[in-house]
Length: 350
Image (cartoon, rainbow, N blue to C red):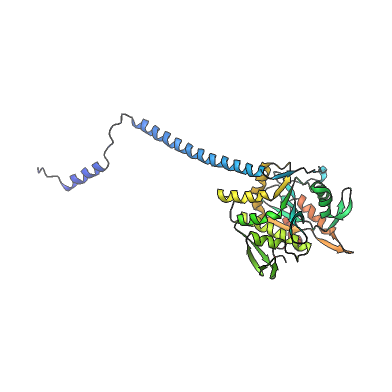
């Protein structure tokens, strides 16, 4: 027999060299397997710890920002049981009365009421909701004051009187109150990277020209859009509603609250323009923020309470508005809007 190795012997030798058994470490196979599992578990635990640390940090930042929101005392009435929402879904509906400040009738940026009055409603299933606007010049009964334009309830008796007025008018239980200071709207718009608004015709405000159709606005242009001097009060309120809607849509549709850095800038700008009732907790604000995404998709409905002019004064159309208040109580604003399309708040406003 020849001492020269064959090709098969060389191949077997190379395979053996490539998969040589490790030197005996003194551990049995079972011990080595257990050690690998321990390493894997420690690594997994480290990942969970890192995620938890980031989550806790985010919560701390959110609480810090929410704690910086100005709080004011507001009195809320407790409606009779018969007036409470039916509650067809598990959970609890939430209705927040929102007003505006910082845009005067003359168009200048001031700290006075802006005329914006709307109900932000989140359905009990937390999957849908709507925004119901009330014309500020509508004459309504005001508790202890007789009949007056609803915006005057705020200027004469503060947020508490306006809350009582709206609750008496609608029989909708209001859980919270919030005021948006539109003087800070420019910072919010810049934080979200600008917003889109739609105008039916070209117009000019403070030297800025808006063209017909979609306009992409930065913060300064957004402020000019909201306070155009030639606007009527109705037009100014519609512009404010349109701008708030555009900001909410931009936040939801572009997932701006996912990136931590962007989240901080957006929330910081938003909290600077808010004033809320003293019972509005940080956790409730955080929950509401997470649910606002439902108002920026097909699940969100924007309507305006119908009104008519009689003898030079504006009055709500009781025949339809009473059905609107019922729709809020029944979590059925979307169904109401389909039945009464003329009440849907337009996206393109003059």
